[in-house]
Image (cartoon, rainbow, N blue to C red; front, side, top):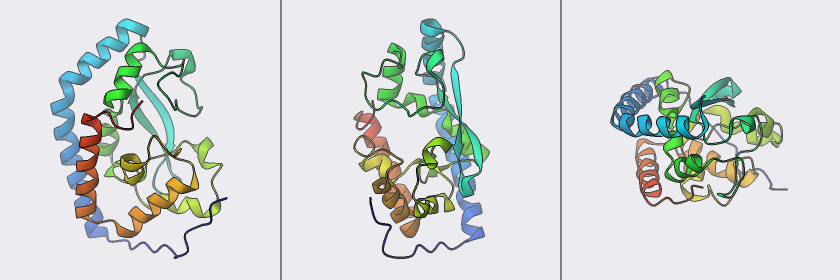
Length: 205
């Protein structure tokens, strides 16, 4: 068992900063979504041709203060396998379609989450949202990660995605480090690292 962090986590509610961040998130997400529209159209057609509808996969995730919301992704698994179970952990998972493997490798399947950002359910940077069934496995202290809005990317996403399962305490420690040290410069650095990782297909499967 991993021990909880030795220092108590404090989180200041700065409403002005939250509003400014919300505006930046919505504007940037809208721009990226518009630029990525042609790629999304091609991906949707590929999914439809290989395995039919639905194209978009919705699943319940825990947001800030553990409020549930529907996260959006392009469907990468076969229709019968789109249920609340742990997500694929390697490229050989039989639930993933041929098109799905490409979408997951390139992270194109994650692009619909920009809609979650625009809706305010997610941020560009923040702890990745987890399924309720996985949260049920948490140690009590791990719930502190839900003090902030979940994000598209985070420290875990850029450094440990393929090494540590998201529900593990080791991953939560990274999330709490982010919450404790969150700043515009850190967010910018994590977004830049994410772009590099996506272009290099690093950590995706």
